[in-house]
Image (tube, rainbow, N blue to C red):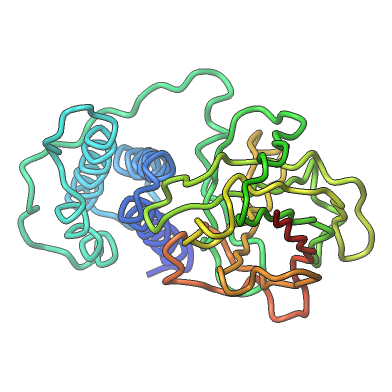
Length: 303
């Protein structure tokens, strides 16, 4: 196996796992994006006419069938009908086939056929690239997270006070990143989510950072949490996002979270983790070994 093919299979495998992870976490928009990107890459390889391909015609047919299954799962996630036609557990059966495509010689487990490659609109191709991991160690661990056009912050005012109830103001001071100066239009999305990624409070975006300096992006902005502390049961998430001009979308670079027992007045620094944002907090990977953190300051208000 050539180095090019080995790298290609690794990227396909990483993309497949990302999509399945998003799917299992209930992040359906991200799962659909990942499935569609990978399906298109597989379709292109399955229908490639170049002579330097290491894949046989039979292997290309199998690759095309996997692409069809990815499209079927993507369609099932977008369907409003309660009965999914192609389930996640079915899709997961294809991962070992894709991983071992050069030696796989059994009958394909599903009765599907490769579909023709869709013609893209001008400029659409740029949004169908795999995104490489931005930190040291390992390629392909990142994932393109697409967001709508940037708005200048969606911060909300403090809730009305209630007797005996506590409100929380979180001041986002700065975030430490080794490439802080290279981040374009950086901002932070703050949310409180349950384990399935469902919002328990309104999501708030900070305005674009006030300045970048050395290894820090400075915000100095207050977030008024939209729930009384006594009613909070889940972690507070902070997702650092920045614009990527080459790929024309906003990407999540990393995330952090604060547990309920960390809510106390005063300064706090919290660790940064590699994307994709893991609301279940089961597969956490530190962004870097360097001492770089999200710096916050908490103020509690009680009647």
